[in-house]
Image 1: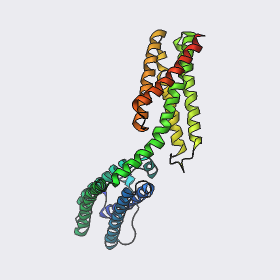
Image 2: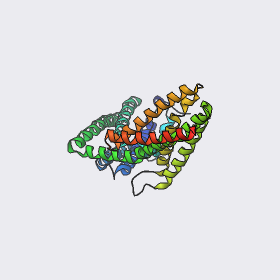
Image 3: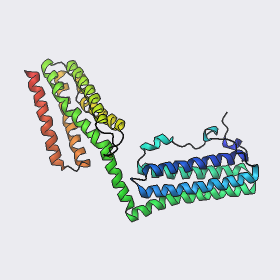
Image 4: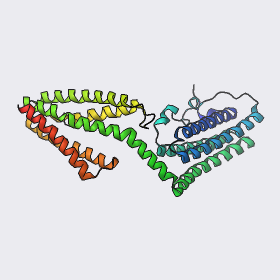
Length: 319
């Protein structure tokens, strides 16, 4: 069964500290390697943090050898109740550079809290001194992480990295999401309103809208995922892009489909038209915000396209 920190022996506390320092060092090294190409300055900071953690590990091992010999028992984070945990490494692939900086500060603060709590577990002067020194150094690391951030801001490196992060976000999230939202919002207008005007029945319009939205979402998702492997273009993993595009396509179509759950046909129609106006406004804003398109130009293009498709749906439904 898992023990609490207070139930650990001095030997187990040191073994846990060694394991923790080694894992934190590997996390820093892995993060640095993943972001080295796009965020070199932050990668340098992470490498420096890795070297510090490696130094801590060596000092802990030297003390352990003197106190208990060569064998270090295996005791892991999950073996101690309430002990600090770390995100699985495969999850860190989705962290943005700003989230990584926050994660580093959290890791250092938690490590400092561990050493401060571990001091109470022993009366051995050498062990207490080392644990106290490491707690103080973890506090310095927290301050060092903030200082590195300030240095990057002052040198302009932070601004360059933020610009790189924004470009990456636009390429991998905004562009496929916007393409899906535009397709879902505009292309489903014709079938939904054609069915509505042809039958004057909310239920029929709702079923057609759901089918069109889901079908378009699946189609756009697969099309986006298979269009580019993302290696040369920098557009990221095909699965992620396809998922974003497919979900946004479905959402774009479902938005003006849900009002047809209202039994009163004319009320449902007015609500759906209001939702369409909101959808087109959102698309225009996103294009203006992330694609550097003038707001009036973006609004004009989106409204003209949406209006034409809407009219086609009405004409076909009324024929």
